[in-house]
Length: 296
Image (tube, rainbow, N blue to C red):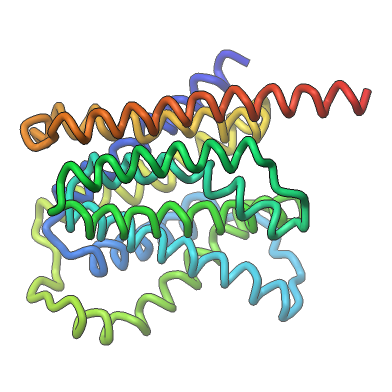
């Protein structure tokens, strides 16, 4: 069990580097995500996929899984867009609202009643985000795009949980990466018109960072998290994922000198959001324990 917890936290810590790498890579967010998905998809096909049986999927199932893959791609696109528009710290603090967005999306998708306490937590998080927004007007575009990224992440996570028990997660991830890459390839000509760029080929340094992003931060962390989930519950993993934005902000301050550009308003808003995430985590944990007690 200790090994599983170590694997889980190692994967989450490494995910914290994705923001820093996104800042270091000179490509715009569209080309960055295109290369990340391509390299990850190739790596999956060579390292993870061999020996896996291919399931029989009907047209509806293919469409559902492919649609989730497009949402994953759009989440990455907006996440790195937020970083390019503002900073790693802003993108990461917006990412911490994923669980709060899920508290709205999950009841809608699963046709359940809304939890008024979780709605209160969402209002608290929005107060923190608004505080950051007021403290730095130049970060407003990055905050908006970052919130869209968090919303997309919450949405595909809810849909992924619904299909995860029915199919091999390796196959699901492979199809999702393929559909995300295909859709982004079709989208790129239009995207480049909206977000012009003259750099389509990565520099040598960019290739190194992209390979780290694909092989270490995507494929290896996927393998680590999958191994951890054999012993650790998916709910425990979801709670631990709240640490990713914390790791990301610390790395941004240490290695991207973002401590110099963050003002007191950002820190005050960040404290409100992180406190909300902690309280929400405690509430969800107690709620799940009560549900387990009622079932026994």
